Amino acid sequence: MADKILIIGVTGYIGKFIVAASAKSGHPTFVLVRDSTVSDPEKSKIIENFKASGVTLVFGDINDHQSLVKAIKEVDVVISAIGSEHLQDQENIIAAIKEAGNVKRFFPSEFGNDVDRLHVVEPAKSVYNVKVQIRRAIEAEGIPYTYVAFNFSDGFFLPTLVQPGATAPNPTPTTPTPPPQEKVTILKGMPLLDTVFDKEGDIGTCTIKAVDDPRTLNKILYIKPPRNIY
Image (cartoon, rainbow, N blue to C red; front, side, top):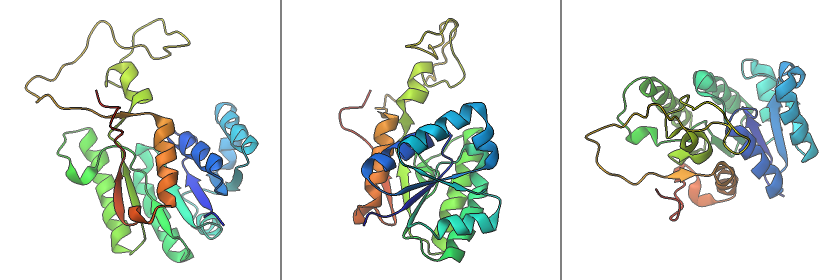
């Protein structure tokens, strides 16, 4: 039987794609949701789509240890897709996994650059430092893991020319976040390097495929399609 997967942070940007890929793959898929999420007008639409695809809702909170342990005991694999502002809270997930004692694999909220190989400045530096701390905590506890690194997601970065938050006026249905037109920042002195942009659906699919691939156990999974380099 396919491993049962619990996904945390499901209404965030990348979480929705991971849930969709998991449900499509045939894995019994569980999502951790709070009562407030279901009552939220926007997020409730996402939750209804999950339910329509056969996903099971598990009510709990990342800051409620007992509800977290209870949810984790029901599954085999835990995937965290929580946002950057809550990355430190993954220490709670680590503690719950350790207590539950049944998890075959933990995917922490990475889904970006390989944080052990970067040298960056603020504000990204603080975010990456937390991801590094979470990696070391997972390893120190002996929890089986996979770290997913894919550089950039095209739906998030390409519309703004890799300047999140910088958009032009007059969005359209096909370009809801059109690229900036008045000002574009170009970093001079940088070497000309290939940059990888991955489709979010592919990121979700590769993440779920890694669940079933023993080669990815206690490894970093790099998603780098050979024909998706700009």
